[in-house]
Length: 99
Figure 1 (cartoon, rainbow, N blue to C red):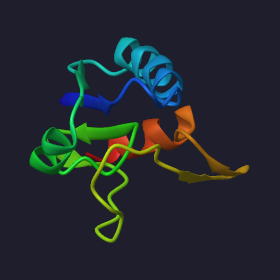
Figure 2: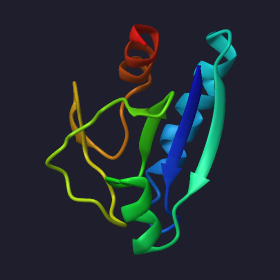
Figure 3: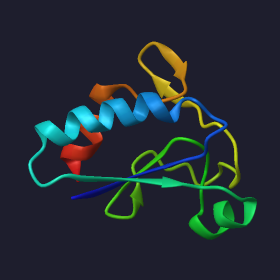
């Protein structure tokens, strides 16, 4: 499974998602992790970037919200502990193993 972490530098939350995904890559055989820096509003539109961090598995946004705006912004995820800047490692594990 190809996992892509889409992010932009001005949002620090991508680093937490990256740590979680790196840990999961060692756990899940066949998972490859790619990081993609989104740098411009035009690129955000082109990639349908709905905020940083966005996590795609085989091109599909794991936490898709079709109503979320496209653009260079930080993304908010609902976690068991309330809103956060990244999904928990358990949420990511569950989403990736359902793929």
